[in-house]
Image (cartoon, rainbow, N blue to C red; front, top):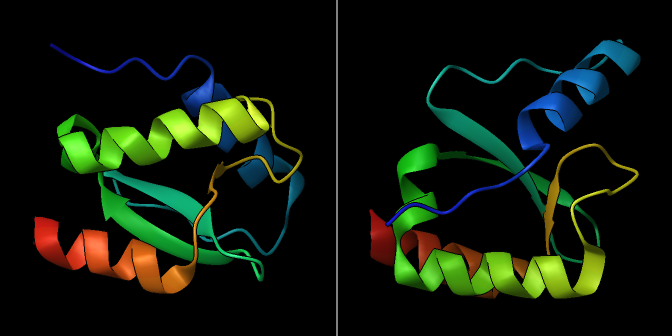
Length: 90
């Protein structure tokens, strides 16, 4: 069972095109923004199939939808919580 993120690829491409300071993300990875300060994390796309990460994606969809002005995926949790979840997935 996969998790579909409609428009993510197009949104990330548009964000990279619109910002001269955008840093490219390697194939197989995804940039996400976390916390109040919108800290940028680059994570493997394989995390998208993990149940704990799917919960974060559901929260992001409820709070922001998929059309976010930053152009990337914004995760609505603290950096501390996000780092804990990511460390468990490593």
